Length: 505
Image 1 (cartoon, rainbow, N blue to C red):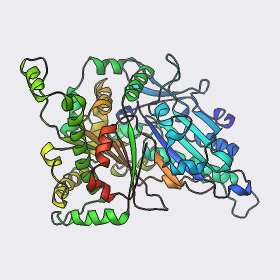
Image 2 (cartoon, rainbow, N blue to C red; image 1 turned 90 degrees about the vertical axis):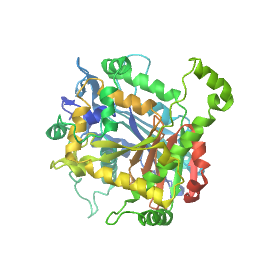
Image 3 (cartoon, helix red, strand yellow; image 1 turned 135 degrees about the horizontal axis):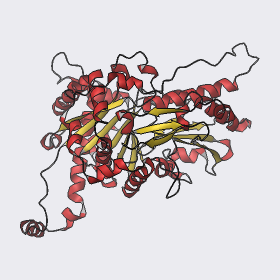
C-alpha cells in the first residue's frame, strides 16, 4: 500500500451525466478459481502477491482512492486528497467450506458466511451516519484445504463501467502474474505499459445541448421531477446512497443463472432470421433480447394477476370500491421497455476513447406494446421485435452520446429521476450484454477462472449476458427479478426447453 500512497497526487475529477446514473450502484462480480493441484501443498494465489499487485494496479487507477462529493449546485465530483485518501476495503480471509461444495451449489455466494450481494450491491458508508462511500470492496476468500479461491470485486459504478471494470481486473491480474515470474528466466520481461484515461474531458468534447437524437423513453425524465427527486439530488452522496440501499434491502430478489448451448441459440437465430426483411442481418443479441422481452413480460403479467389483492379480492368487491371512488380502477395493461446499454467507446471518434475508464455506456429505451408481448413467441413475432431492436441501436452514435450526457446534467435532479425510475419502476427490462468483456482473461497466475458470475443486482428487472465459459461455450444468462416473476419464468416451458442448466439463489 505504501508504494501507492507515496506516489499518488491530489486531484479533482468532475463527473458527468454518464457517471451520475451509476452513482447509487456497484459492479459486483465473482471470480471463482479452483486449485487443481491442492495436494502439492503449494501456496495457491499467494495472498502477499495479490495484495501487492492490487496496490500496484491502483497507481494506474488512483480514482479508486477518491471520495465522492457534491457542490452547492449538486454537481458530483471525486476528490483525491493524498493526505486523506479514501482507500478501498481489501480483505483476505479463510472459509471453512470446501470449494467443491460451492461448485455443487451453483457457485451461490449466499452459501458464504457473509451475503456479499446485500452488503455491497449499493455502495454506502459503514455506520448510520458520517463516513464516506468506499469506491471499491475487494474480498479474497480462501476455501478449506487450499481447494480454491473466490475473488469478489465490487467497484462503484460512478468510477467506471463494465468495460473499465474488466480493464482494471485484467491489469491487476497481469501485474500478479508478472510478480510471480522467475527473474532468472529468459522469458522475464518488463511489465507491459498500459494507458488508462480517467479525466472526463472526453465527455465534454462530444457534449451537445440539442436533444433531437433522443427518444421519448429517455426524454421522459425531463417531466418526471418532484419533491422527492429534488431532495435526493440536494442531499449528500452518502445520504442518497443510504436511501437507495434501504430501497434495495426492501425489495425481494431472486437471482437465476441459465446456460443455453451455442447450437440451440444458433438454431433459434436461424429460424428468426428467416423472417427478416431482405438485406437485414440480426445479431444474436437482437434475438435474445426479443425472446426474453416476451418471456419476462408474460411472467410479470401473471405475477401481477396472482398477487394477493387481485387473487383473493372478489371481482364484485373490487368493482364496488372502484365505483365508489374508494379504489382506483386498475390501469390499462402496460407494455415493456427494453433498455439496452451500449458501450459508446466504439461509436465516438475521440482518439483516447478505447483508453477511457469513466462511464461511457448509454442506453436506449425500446418500447413494446402489451398486445405484442402477450403473443405466442413464434419465429415471425420474434423477427418483428428483433427488427425494432436492430433498427434502434445504430442511432446510438456520437451525437446521441453527447446529447444524453448533457441531458443528465441539464437539471440538478435529472439523474435522481432516472435512478429512482430504475430502482422502483416495473415495466422495464434492463438488458446488459457483457459477453465481449474479458472476464475470463483475469488470470492471477493460477489459470483462468472456473466460473465468472455477476453478483445479484441491487434492483430487479435486470438481465446479464455474461461471457461464455471457455469450458462449456454457449451463453451464460443471469436474471434478477422478484421471486414470483422468476417462478413464472422458470415455469415457462418454451423458455426452459432452450436451457441446458439452471441454478438460482
